[in-house]
Length: 272
Image (cartoon, rainbow, N blue to C red):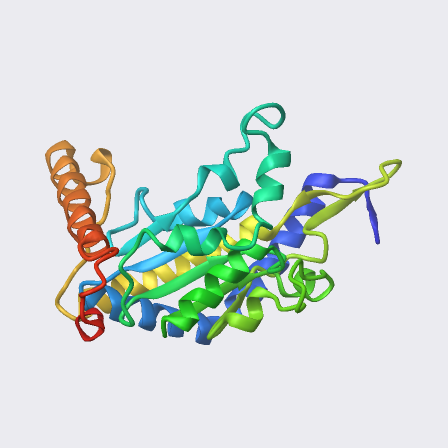
């Protein structure tokens, strides 16, 4: 532990280390992109889930400027609505709910999943029950799971599950945010606890690295994605055209996830 006399410079120095750790994961980034692109090219979806502050990475993937359809952002407000902090819909309830066994199954009950789908589950600690069960359920359905965790932090954290299993135990591929144990990276003299977390920095870099690789694969395959773009980049008319087309494509892809929900007679082979 080194107490900083220049906190902002110290934080940015740690961020530089995170950049290096993300850059060292090119093989994993490209593999994730290949799996995700295959799902999108098959007309299916990449399911992206994160509880708590991991929601940030879900929304970074889609929808926002520089992103495109093909991703199903699963954001449960009961697990991630932090604005009120206390009182009704407060943080205490959200932290409680993300460790309720069975909630992941109820969330996925809403979707007609296919083995052509893929999943990206984000959890810095990789120890809370809902994201771990989410990954477990996807794998049971033979859907490839990419886990985005903070390896050092996850290794030092205890699983909330009775069997001790973590998100990494249900992942076909693991990405590391590169942040330290405890996430926060700056120690201030006279302050007992560190401040300024780093997992979001690494997580966002990984998300956008994957996004860029997927865009290249789709474009090279003759299926250039409909990318949300700002009017001051492509012009107002084109920006509106892209937004409408991208949202329409998202709706059409999502329709496939609802079409046969709860229909027992639906033949499993049709889901592949």
